[in-house]
Amino acid sequence: MIGSVTGTAIQNEDNLNFTVAQGVRSMNEVMPWTEAPKAYERMQSGQARFRVVLTVA
Image (cartoon, rainbow, N blue to C red; front, top):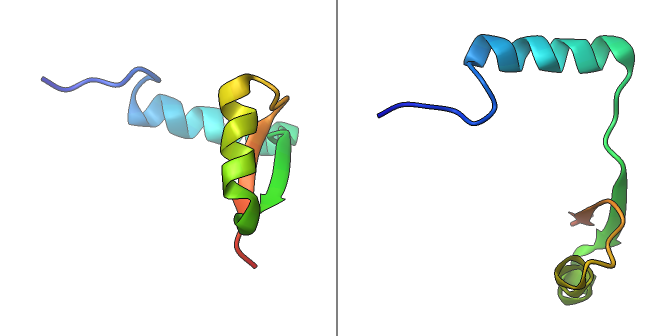
């Protein structure tokens, strides 16, 4: 069985090309890797307003 919840590979490519052409960007909360437990807690509690991204630099 083969399937995708988000559409075919061609549809996904078309969607990505559209977002690039329109300047669509994700909204992120950026936190350092050392705060991973805090980031996870924010996500689990529903306090994270956007996507939580951990930085390693």
